[in-house]
Image (cartoon, rainbow, N blue to C red; front, side, top):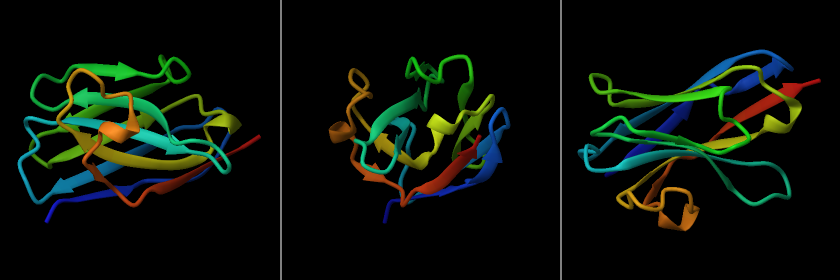
Length: 124
């Protein structure tokens, strides 16, 4: 079955960096858009970044543009989210997800598969 497994979360000081990884298995994802979302306590799950697997085209939320970089590793079948200049407001559970909707990767309801999430905590 399809599995998306996130790793790499943790505690980091403000201004620090973390790289999250999402290991994808169970099917071929070359026709999918892979996204990262995050959810802080009491908040809605929000779009962070997305990458189209076959073209490498990327898109970012305004709040993370210039600080976060999404990439994919075809050999390892993983999608990574490199996060730099982290701020306390980046604290959330980060989720990896997959969708076939190339035209609207921003809506969480468009995603077919989700990982279990990994906690990122940024201390001030």
